[in-house]
Length: 468
Image 1 (spheres, rainbow, N blue to C red):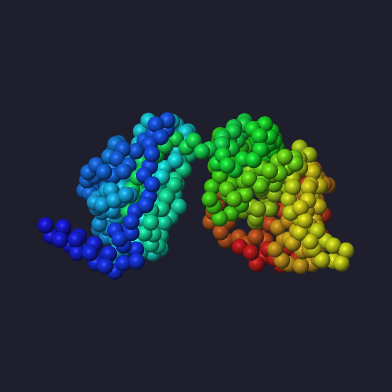
Image 2 (image 1 turned 90 degrees about the vertical axis):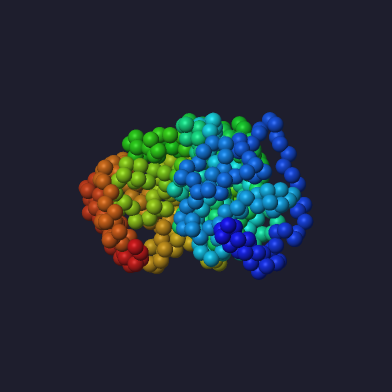
C-alpha cells in the first residue's frame, strides 16, 4: 500500500515538471502495426496488452516478459502503464529520476535459425534522459549488440531497431528492453511498446569462399554477377595474405562477413568487417570500373594482424601501415586495381586532390609522393611529422632489393613470439621500429644502414620517439 502511494506521487511529480513532454497530453497519431502473416513476429505480447509481472526475476523465460533488473536496480521503478502506449494502449515503463541505473525487461526467444539474420524493433518514448545509453534494445550478454541509443526527451514514438546476426547454434536469444547499458548507465523515463522480432528480409546476402556480404538491399547498385566477381577477387586477396603469413589465417578460417553498419568510421576490421552504410553504395558503384576497393582490402589486411597467432606486437609500431603493406603485397601479386583519392603535385608546386587509378605496384607512387604523409613530403624532405605512408614506401623499397621472401621469413618468426603486453606498453614507436629492424637485418644479413640511410633514420627517430 505504501509502495503504491509513493509510486503515484512520484509519477505525478514527474509529469508536472515536464509539461512540454507530457506523453498523455498529445494526441497519438501512430499508425498501428499490421501483422505480416508471411513473416510473423516471434515475440509474445509485444504489444504489452497482456499482464506482465513487475517482480524481479533471475532469468528470462520463453513467451513472457520478465523484469530481470540489473545494476543499481533499487533506483528504478517499473510499471505496465495503462493508456500510455501506442494509440492509448498499454506499455512498459522504466522510471529512474534520481540516480543512474542499468535495468531491463527480457524475453527468451527460441527456435531461431542458427546463423540466420533477424531484426528487432520497438516503439519508444523518453523523457529527461541525460547521458549513458538511454533507452535501447539489446541482447543479454556482456557487450552484446545494441540498437541506437535514445536519450533526451521524445514525446512522440520513436523507432529503435536492432539487427541480430549472431544467433547461436541452439537457436536461442534473449531480447532486452533496457534503460542504460554496460558502463553507460542512465536516468530518466523510457516507455516501450510494439516490440517485434522477425527474420530480416531487407538484406542483400552473397557468399564466396572466404566472405559473406550482408548489407541492406537498397545499398547495392550493381548486379549479382558483379558482386560475385568482386567477392571472388577478395577471396584472392585473402589467399595472398595467407601466403604472406605462410598459412596463418584469422578466425580459424571461418567465413568473414562484410556487414553494413551505422558507425563513426569508414569501416572497422574484425568478423564481421563493419562497413559504414553511408559509403557502401558509392563504393560498389566503382566496382563497375574494375575497382577492387582499397578500403575493404585494407580492413581484410587488419584481420591478419599478429593476434591471429596470439603473437607479439612489440615490433608493430603502427598497424595502419602494416595493413596497407599487406594490401600492397596482394595488389602486386594479383595486378589488382584500386581507385582512390590522391594529392597530386601541380606545376606551380601546389597540390590538388584527384581521383586516380592504380594497378598493381603502381600504388607505390601514392605512398612515395601523392599523400600528405608520403615519403617525398616527410622523410625525403627531412620533416619529422606523421609519416605513415612514407614508412610503408620504405618497407616496399626494401622488398625491391631483397624480395618478399625476406618479409615472409621475418613475419614467420615474429608471429611465433608470444605476446607480452607488459613489454609492449613500455615501448614507444621508435623502439618498436628498431625491434622490427633487428629482424630485417637478421634475415637479410645486412647492416641497418643498407636498408635506410643515416639521414632517414634520424628523421624517423625524431618523429617515432615522440609517439607511444
